[in-house]
Length: 354
Image (cartoon, rainbow, N blue to C red):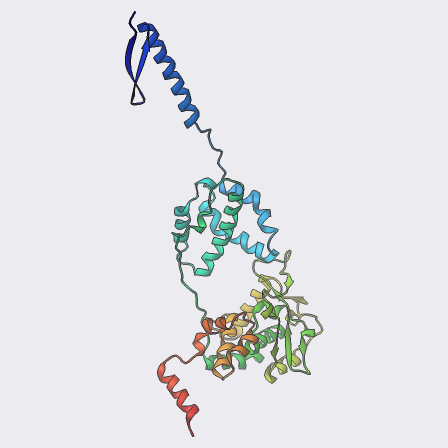
């Protein structure tokens, strides 16, 4: 008996099935089709992937971030998370965050400065790095080279020389001793706010006419229950000795008190180691003298401008201000250099005059 051979299509491919009868050919085709179907199912079937809500994942794993940074930095990170990151990514799943969603986040923050956006990026990346380590994602989308965000730098206003002198002359008119002490220190030394608030009387050498800076306190996002912690400056260059000129010495000696920290409110006998206490003092100062748009940090800039424009070399100015690099002194305080060619020419001519 002649064998029967029939053509069939399986997934678009023609196959020939041979048998002794039509029934045998049909059975063989059925077996072949079933075997192919099972193979395809085993090959293509993927079990459903369990996804992880970003907000819950961040909260569950926050301990692994907070334990690697200082208490102050942890407060800052938590603030960035709650204020900007969770409102944007909170309802998304970790697995669904890609470079496009990160770019959309950056675009939403385009009115912020580069520094502000970068701080949010650091926190977001640290969370996604944990997800990467857990195998939930294959890469950290915040590191994609296609991403762009604002390069805008926020420049602080700096008082000109005449306004700077006026502010210094107004110091003695302030009502409270801690206000006079603070403004004198910031105006005559250019110390950072946290460095001034951490100064003790033991840091002052009235014999050598200098101030030793070895500590700082971060008051941002602090409270009475959780005041700022005293710690060393971020870099070794922050530990330094700065000169105490006669005008500053006069303010310090005439306002000296019994308390350990120089900036201590005599009414409460408390140092200003919380954001609320400092803001209360600053508002009081602004009510009494016209500080205009200038912040406490503006006077740090003014000190640098005065030092450089008075002929103090960059390295010495860098040392007094506690910058880690001389380039920072020049880049941030470029306004201290003559602003136009004509002025530079006049200064050069003056140096050559006989």
